[in-house]
Each structure stands twice: as C-alpha cells, then as structure tokens.
Amino acid sequence: MIRNIFLSAVSVIVLGSTSVAETLSNNELTALLGKVDRVREAIKVSAQQTQACTPPSPESCSFESYCGKLAERGSEAYLYQDSEGYQIPNYSYLFFAEEAEICARNVHPPLIDDPFFYPEQFVDVEKAGGKENLQKNQQKLAKATDRMKSIYEDTKAHIISILNKRKTESNKAQIENMIERVKSVRVKIGTPGPAEKMAAQGCETPNAAYNMQLHELMICPQVMNMPESSLFTVFGHELGHSFDPCAVAMDFTKTGAKFPNWMNKIVASSTGPVAFKGMAAGENPFGSVISCLESPSSIHIKIPDKKELKKVINSQLSQLDSFVDSGQDQEDGEGNETVRAGIGARDATRAGLEDSLDNIDKYYDQFRGCPDISGSVFIEEAFADWVASQALGEKLESLPAAKKSEYAFAAPGVFYSATCPALVAQSYAKAKAMAPKCASLQKFSVAEKGEMGEFGLPHPEMAERVNRIYFAKPEIKKALSCQSGETGTECK
Image (cartoon, rainbow, N blue to C red; front, side, top):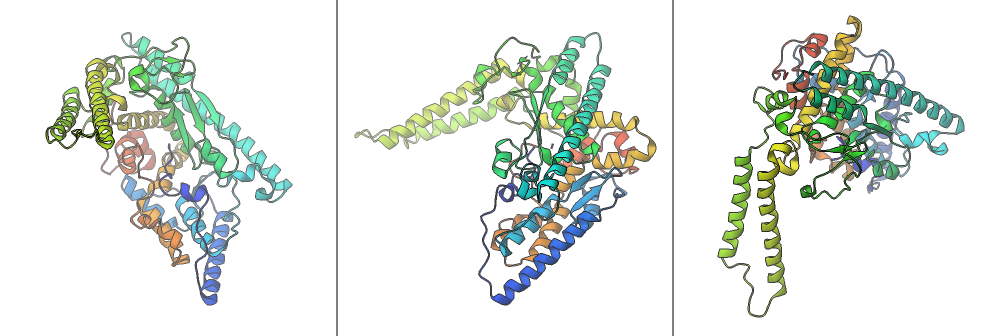
C-alpha cells in the first residue's frame, strides 16, 4: 500500500498525543471551545450526510489534477464514497482536527462514529458506546472481513492470470515458480485494540504489508471498509512483492524467505526444505519490465550496475585511507582508549566495505534487485505498483461500462488521501484556523507545504508512482475518460 504512509506525522497522534491545553484567558478558551464544537458538529454532519460521490473529472490524468479536485473536499470527513457505500476517509483532516481539539479538551470523544477509523470501538464496550453498539461494530467487522477475503481472492486470481499470460515454453518453470509463490502467501488480519496494540502489529495507521520473512500479508482493519478497487490495488501491490525483483531471487520455504548468510539480516531466516527456488536476474521472465521501469520513459528507478556500486565503495575506502594518512586516529604513547576505539570502528568499517565489494562480485547477478546489493528498494516498490496496475487493467476490462470510472478512480484513492499536497495543506489550514495558538499542532507545520506522508519511506515519490505507472496503463486512462497528462510509457 499502501506501507505506513502516515508514519511521518500522523502516527504521533494515533499512538497518543502528549499535547496539553494552552494557557489561555477565559474568553480565549471559550472562543476555542466554541470553534471546536462547531467543527466537531460539521464533521459529524459531513459523515452522516455523505452521499455516493461522483469521481472527480479533471481533464488531465495526473496525480496533481486529481489532488486539486479533491482539495475542495478538504474539510469533509470522507473524500469519497462509492455507489455501494464504501468510503475513503479524509485522514489528514480528521487527524489534524483531532490534534487541534486536544488543545482545548483533556477528554475528546471520537470525531466520527466509525470503528474502522477508531478500531478500539470493535473491542471496547465504553469506546463503542455500549454493548449494543459494540455488537453492531463486531458484525460490521465480520462482514468486512468476509468481503475483504473475497476481494483478496479476486485480486490473486487476476495476478495469476497475468502470470499465465506471460508463460512461454522457455520461461514455464520460472512463471510456475512465481504462481506458486503468489498462491501460498498467507493472510493475517490485524487484531483491533488500543493504539499500542495496533502499533505492535504494524497497524498504527491504515496499512497493509507483505512480510518476506514470513511470506505473509498483514491487513489492518482500518482499510477494510474502503471501496473494492482501493483494496484490490493494495492487495495487488503487496502480492506483487511476493515475486518482486528481490523476493524472486531468494529461495523460499512454504513459510518464508531463506535469507543468504551474507545479507546479515537481523530477522530469522525461514528453515526447512526449499519450496520455491530463487532465480538469477537474467532468468526473471519480467526482466524487460524491470528494464523498462528503470528507463527515463517510465518511472526511471535505476539499479546501479556493478561498476557504479564498486566506484562508490572504493571512494569510501579511499576516504578512510586519507583519514589514516592524516594521522588523526593514530594511537598515542599512553594507549588512549578513545583513540583505540576510533581505530576499531575504522577497521570494522573497512571490513564491512571490503565485504560489500566481495558480495557485489559474487552475488550481483543473482540479487541485483535487492537493497543489500544495490542499496535501493525503489525497484521493488515500482515493480509491485506495476503488478497492481496490470491486475487493475485486466479487472477494468471485465466490468460494465457504468462501473469502470468509479472503480478506476478509487483504485489509487488512498494515495490521494494520504499524500495529496493540496489536500494535506487544506486540511492543516482548516485545523490551524480552529486552534491558531495550538502549540502541539505547530509540530506539523510542514503540512502547510503538503509534505505529510513522504518522510523516510522506502517508496518512490507518490505522484510519480501514480503518473508514470498507474496512468501509463491505457485501460485505466480510458476508464477515467482523461486521455491527456504527462504519463510514463507502459512497460510490457
């Protein structure tokens, strides 16, 4: 998915804010509480009166064009509701509004009555508002779980179909290897509970993630009430990771990857007989797709070649040698312990760099798609996006014309909700107007630039992913009826 897109800022709120009411005069506090109450009522009305939305219809197929249209909904509880009633929450506004409210109140009940936004309402009687509501919420979760499983199986079937279409006499063994990898991915559903429990499962935010170590797809309950195509795209992306350029290079047991010893993973490697044999990069049936994704005409996620990688490492070794030649770390006559520690660290760094050079020589051809060799995970993410876009294109072809537009729009809809700069800036501005002196809200001031959600994430820039992979798929552009836009070349 979409992986921890909110981790940079919003998870602070999800895990529990430490902000306190500010020192305000009685008149100022009364005014703030009045604003809070009006915003709370507006959010509730927005949530209750949400009608089936017509997808935005910009002339250009671009992330930026859709963001501009969606920014108009910046102060609504939900950005979109499809014809079946499934919704994409406006996460940024709800998070920022909640943070502003914390400044005015020590106790702040949920802004909207939505257990998929506040998962504790699935298990806590008080949080749910009584036993009757708790029972209703649990019934909603059971229904959503059944629906989710159906969408997951449909997504898996389309990915297997794509794999079968690529099968030839020469790559049959490799394709069947990939199909078995996809079929055997285990699904784990996050258990609702308090914020701390959700965070321990990787579900502090709406999330889904493929775990190579366990060959497992974790699905967090927060995403389970989203439109079908939003889930289809998330599942397509995560299943794509089960045979992305790194995963497919590794041997797998039925329960996870057998990490090579030289990778020095801190997680446990799966044990037992090999079920799926790893293949060298040159044997990958999707080599042409990976090369295309690396090109400027596509998303241009370039895997460095051996020469480039070794040049960087040799440069680092030269810097170490220059440090030694300068005499800055030479041990003095008194055996200074600090100096000795520095020498030890330098020697360990040199040994690590020399190991990296050795690994490049030995393992590059097999594992060039892995960050342990290339230093970049971007190609894995770009490939997983490509898999999802191919499955989505095939799915769209099977839908009735009346449903294609809303299905195509909602597919990457969660991307817009998470990282649309115009929407994030609009949401932040609304919350800031509500509590202009809220010191704790100021820590998110970067949101004024619309940058929430992009910090420290191992993904290519979201706009590029949508523009140059999703919108490069002709079936998606056709379904949206927007043929223009600076899109990438479709990789085949």
